[in-house]
Image: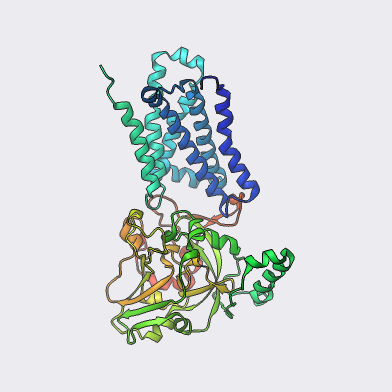
Length: 188
Length: 308
């Protein structure tokens, strides 16, 4: 497991994007490509965010150590968050800035999404080794922001549904499990 | 508003059956096996109520549907509606009518001659299409059943048949069957139709076969599909979305760019069919979906922020 180079994670991270590109090129994306691309990017971002949050419990409970891949997983997640927002702004809103900004502050679900992005931004910016050295203990503290960020992202996902579908509740439950595992007291 | 008389009708286009036959010939005997007999085309007269905007393609209209009885995703109805039995079909008309009873579909369709109505269709989710329905005014059917003077509302109900409608489960969180309602003057308005066809052919199942309501100045969820029951009432009937989320969905649900959905803006809409360059297809939403001239009077003096 440890022999897999970190670069492989970045490469694997491009596979879902490649799949979307393929669907667009082959016409399999459906009659509303904009919404489909936007929603797929958001969902992929969620998968990687959850993946990043799964690494610590995997090590602790299953003794699978993927810690060296965590930065890559987090950065890939952020990459998809960024693409998701970009597609929303350019393809969905058609760069109607006034309506987009108005919606961002007035619509709670969009605001939650924006807040998640803003919380993730400093994490992405300080994901380099130099920042880890410079920030010391504070780096760990800063990166606790990932918890509220993912919580906001999940709420953002559920809240945009006309009615919350079973799949939405599963994501919320999954987040609950990932959080609960962190609350399990250490033995001794 | 009025349709250009030189606009070619669907009759001018290669008939679907011939087109399919040609394909079958080109594809050889193997392809012919898949084509099967083409359904009978519906003779329909053009209507002055049709828009001259270019309709969406059949592919777009039949593969992008909200029909939650068959699943949550836009593609689910197309994938899952095939098993729905639509023949035999009858509509139970009851409540405050002179001639209540179970009307076979053939009988319902004889209420008035079929017309082609090319309508704008605006979903509450802020997307839109232009759809060439085949239908007839609902008022014709209600007149045949005989509306009693005390009737103030019309209630509609979709088929409830979990064996064929895969998402009609308790888990879905929706209290099936789907129900909708109109005020009697809305129901009798000439723009309000019962549609049984699309692009000259019988309505595909995912679009609400064999009979659905179309109310073009209201958000799409008012246009209830696969209707089995029509009841004339004195009190406002319950509607599925209002029951689910009353603060978000009102009884009227008129298309209104000034009254936003609590969670998103209704000021603009994306016309489906713009492909990837949808920023060119986001357009301002029109009051009453552009049918204000015909229907605004129905709501004179009403506060449309309150009666959303």
